[in-house]
Image (cartoon, rainbow, N blue to C red; front, side):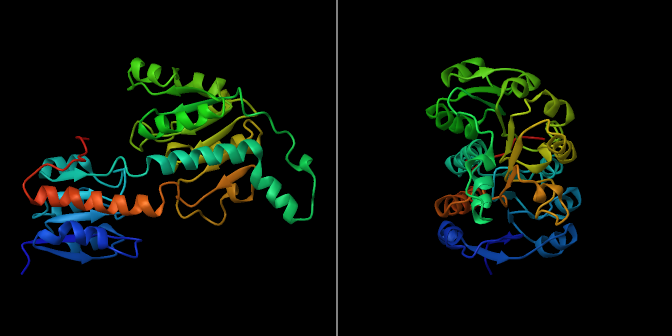
Length: 320
């Protein structure tokens, strides 16, 4: 019988070689489940020493049932599906991987900005419908000299800043937790939320989802934006008030949106965003590359290996 039981609560992966390599020198039984509800997690994971978690809900009821668990390691950055307070009270370490897809998400956001600015998707559809006319995307404005507003200024938006500045775009940001010297080192002006919305031609959202950030972009912020501006979201869907966004698009308060994440995923078939030509959608794919996925899986497993070996993991989430 193995010394440790590690349960993968749910997954969309086709291989677990990175995890197996990490656990090779530990006496670990690696168990794979596909839990979709809290009750399923409770049933399948009650004797686990550690959990590798993708999307399965880990609320207080689940946490309270984990009598042997020492660590929960998430496949990702966000931990909004984990009750951190309950985990802290239970003495369970919660870890994530904060640096595995910095280029991927920044590249995706920059691609969405460029596609919005040049209206690539609209032109592509027009050509495929037999319309060979650049005016199908009128108006298109010059990119150089425009302003990108970042909502949040952590690792990913700092990465994005360099890419945007290479195109001659000015960058401003809203982040009350970032020191002025950090912004200055990136040649970025810090403004309040509505000021960023007001001066920007592109607003890109880069916030974790929590009680303070949910629907932080809503009616007031869209009203503050230029009617020629685009909003981009590669963070978490509920950070944007989707009803407010749809209304702003329908009333031409803003020019368009490029969204990798939505309030409900997969997207519902009756979501009005699906029928809007000025909206670009991708299926929560910004994080993905072959290299990023392998790095994520290895680092998530290392969080568990470190903990089970008596050390604190490199990536540890603070208290709620």
